Image 1: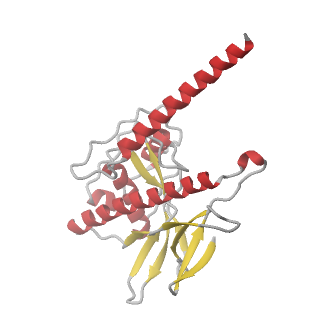
Image 2 (image 1 turned 180 degrees about the vertical axis):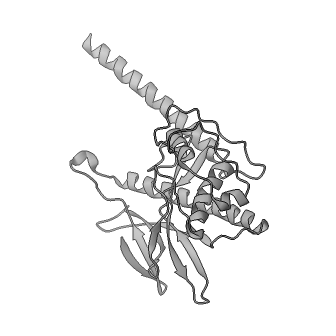
Image 3 (image 1 turned 180 degrees about the horizontal axis):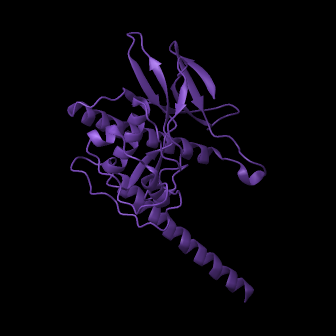
Length: 259
């Protein structure tokens, strides 16, 4: 992470560097930009969902903590040694303690109001998307503003989606199943009248749920989590078909060379 100062405001900037060992693990500028764009998309979807979650709680007079999702943008270097290098930039959060509420493949089991709010938000995201996506890996920092208002700022969020088109951490339908098997409704879920997930009973919510039939919940009456999700799914399916076709052409060419 790099700290930047712009217009007297402090920002944190991050990028994806090479990971692991060996040249095969080099991350190109194009791959880095794609990862950052995926993260911006996830943050935008989470912010959209969190806003509707907050509105529903307010309309139903349900007590929750104030939450918001980090607002970020992408900067790309124009020239110099790092030309074309992209960075994701967001306001620096430096006045609170980071807390993790759930994992990528582990649903939250929190009991305090802050944790229950985050766990219910994850449940709401599944309902709001008609079962096609779920918000996971929830973490944030509690901030106190000048007027003493406390709010939880969420960042580095991930999703599982049935089209598996939301970038790093998206485990697709197996990830959705995992969440549905592990999630336990709390007082906020119940106050919102969110229907418990209809999965077969497993011993102590066993994390191995691949043999459990996945049935998405009914689609919500209001606008879904992200209308573009079907487009993402279609694009992912089209990309797979192209990949499969390319594989067949490669194998055919190899056979012709062998002859």
